[in-house]
Amino acid sequence: MLSRLMSGSERSLDREFSCTVRLLDDSEYTCTVQRDAKAQWLFEQVCQHLNLLEKDYFGIRFVDPDKQRHWLEFSKAITKQMRSQPPYTMCLRVKFYPPDPATLKEEITRYLVFLQIKRDLYHGRLLCKSSDAATLAAFILQAEIGDYDPGKHPEGYSSKFQFFPKHSERLERRIAEIHKSELIGQSPETAELNFLRKAQNLETYGVDPHPSKDVSGNAAFLAFTPFGFVVLQGNRRIHFLKWNEVTKLKFEGKTFHIYATHQEDQKIILTYFTPTPEACKHLWKCGVENQAFYQFEKSSQVRTVSSSNLFFKGSRFRYSGKVAKEVMEQSAKIRREPPEIHRAGMVPSRSCPSITHGPRQSSVPRTRRRAVHISIMEGLESLRDSGHSTPERSVSNGNSFLHSHGNRAEGDRTAEFSEDSYSPSDSVLPTPVSNDPSDQAQLRHTNGHRSNQEEGGTDLCTQNQARPQGVKPKGKRFQLEKSRPTQHGPEERVNEFICSLARLFLVTLALLFALLLLLIVLTESELDLAFLRDIRRTPEFQQFHYEYFCPLRRWLACKLRWMGGQLINK
Image (cartoon, rainbow, N blue to C red):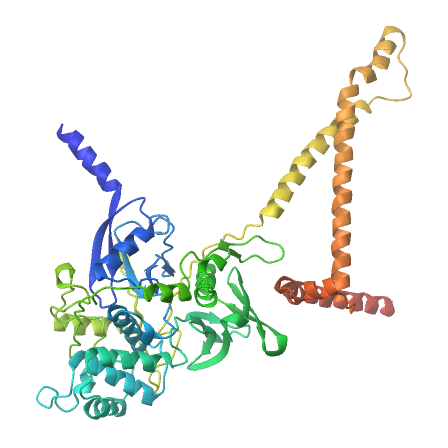
């Protein structure tokens, strides 16, 4: 009986697992999840825990064993998306930044977005000038410690707080000046709202950079914002494309392509290379989701997109959530008493905001709070060891998916992107992308099957023709030899039928190849026909032209010149 009860309990444990979600204030929410539960169920539990209704701006992120970040797809089971064994640790983060955070309906939503942007500022994702950085940091001080009090805040008190990856004493003095003189009387809610209004006007608001390299090998960061697609190098924005200008996003292995139509119908194709194929696929999916969320007016307008080019099927993906306009319309219908918010006060220590010193308050109701307790000395030790240059930590055995890199000196700039301080996908183990050429595989299978049949038919024909023709047997033996064609007639007809099918198949392939060559010649010619213009404007044809046809043409021209030179020399 005891063994039966133990086996039953083991089976129940196999059917469920523990999952921990680290929230934006670094408190944690842990729950037990059924093995076949979808990610939507976990997200709903977290939102209920936070008393959050405007939840479509948020998502749950995790990091796989190769240190590649992913967003949970809510329509799929959790276990089918994870590459490690439970228990799982994930993070709640802002996935789609509100175009105007001040228009959010509820204060709890604005507070969570405030926490996210504060993290972005600290980890160097929100780039700004020193004057803007001082103002943003002063708003954070006002929101978390209140008005300046000479009795509580001695000289140099702002230096005890860490707002950026690196800042100077001059900037610290400017932060204290603004906090002392310009923000007196502002409540935490007002200071947070002013912080959001200031942050949303910055060029890198909402940026979650993806490391990559351009065609020249220069390091760059690609990102998607509420307003479009951006490319950053160092601390400068070198490209910006509005969402209505982006026509297609594609990837092949580690190569990412952005097709856009700029001013006066100018075609633009940007190409970048990511560290791994998995990072490229993650970049592509983020771009597809952001474009669908911000560009469309209804979720019913969202269509399944493919990463395929002219020859391969590629990956297919569809954004399945609400779009920004629907989210704002739904938020306007919220009618309830504002939920109570327990803000986490900033502790005067030169540490990352994600380090908690002693008991802290969470942004959720006290009855459902699970705080993290770390002593001041432990926090300082963690700061010295990790550097806190990224919001992610990585711990073995799947207990945590946060990864830190050592912070390196970056001059006197307030914040700047660099491969050392921010590298979300530094995996050296590339993961194959499911770009299987199914059409070609099917073609190879068909040809192989046909070849076997042809070989069988050839053997039969060879056997029938192997008899010497100059010798004629006599008597009954001659009659038997004479009657063999009648006995093997059906087999010969089958062989002839197979041979005719093979010839038809080869002729069809030859005609299709000839038509393809003719189409290429016509499209590359100067003929100005309507259907040819439409073909030339497609991104697939432009990619074929620049990546395949032009190199092939140069190669053929080089070979022809070489052959001509050889003939002349002879």
